Image (cartoon, rainbow, N blue to C red; front, top):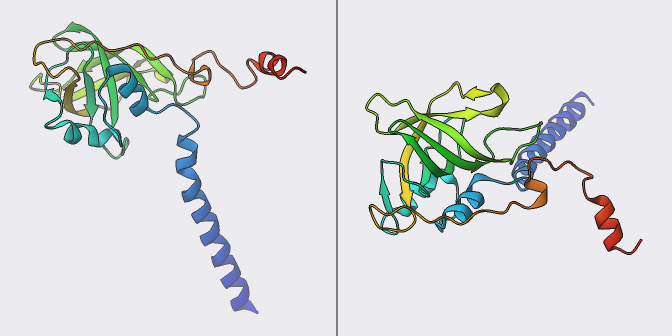
Length: 194
């Protein structure tokens, strides 16, 4: 009888862990990820995890270590950011500071998947080569505490010195910063004829 109880408890634990692991990717589908945002915003047509973009761009897009307006900044995967990150350069402020647009970096009002525009990024690498940066993090109202490794910049147009012409990404209503569950229900109800 005792063995049956242990076996039942072990089986329940395995089922619970399996359920948790299987449901984690589903949660990511409920909010905007950095990859589709950067693809739409920059015109760089690469698929897959952000950490793979740098390697995938080789031979298809020009790559380099200096930021340009419209370029995709490709972050390496790390322990704290295992899938990497991609963002789009919007403005060069100085040789060590840029502004980017990106999605799913800072949780804002407790919600992930937010689009942030004109976000401050500072090159903190010793060589000044943009290999290590700190990025504005909204919850603390300052540059993030950790330095993030950058693989480089992907230029959508292919020409070494031309700025990218990035389209503007129109976020779906659920990804806009002022949206809350329940917003627009009166409009939805009216459209149903009720």
